[in-house]
Image 1 (spheres, rainbow, N blue to C red):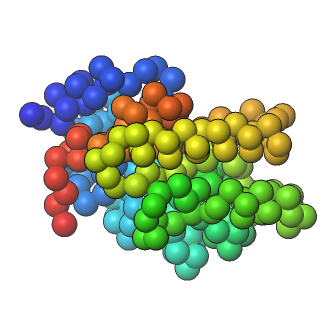
Image 2 (tube, rainbow, N blue to C red):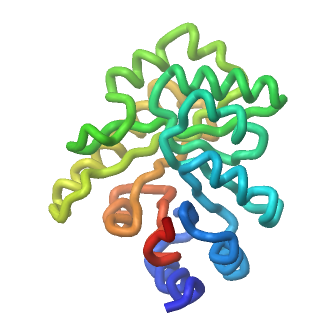
Image 3 (cartoon, one colour):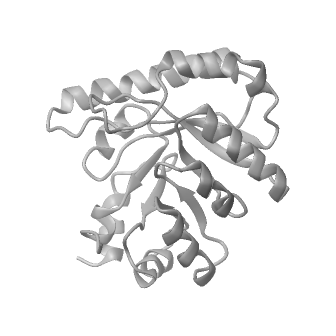
Length: 222
């Protein structure tokens, strides 16, 4: 199946209120252009160098989302143009995004990554760490970031009830965080969860943003 056919198939399962992030990492620019010509505008990359190489060569109206683990020493490269950073997994990273955004003269939109999986390899805040940060005076002084919501990755497993439970716990946490810290903040609405294997469950459990690569572009070209 072509990229266009893959997208048409996926769209039949994605409600209008859910944003599709086409995960283009490890795929060439011509593959991005195929999805772009099919009407997609949001693309996700997880390696700074790859994103830096692609961004100047592709249409200016693409919204680039950074979806990987972001190292502090690389933040300055993506801050000038990135639309959304999904995986903010520590206060250190958030402070550096704020610092670089101030230098670039813009406000950068971010999602806070929560560790919901049974895997130590995944990054993210615990619920306690998240609240501790949001309660801090230091957080309230960050003026060049906008928190748009939460992001999480479920355990890599065939146990759909486990995946569902993890997504549901993240949705509940998002609702709690919204009420406690962002009740009057219009932008805090996003819940980024769900990938090629589990996006249908994620949508059922309240995801507003899914990150799909393999099901659109096929297996990655490393």
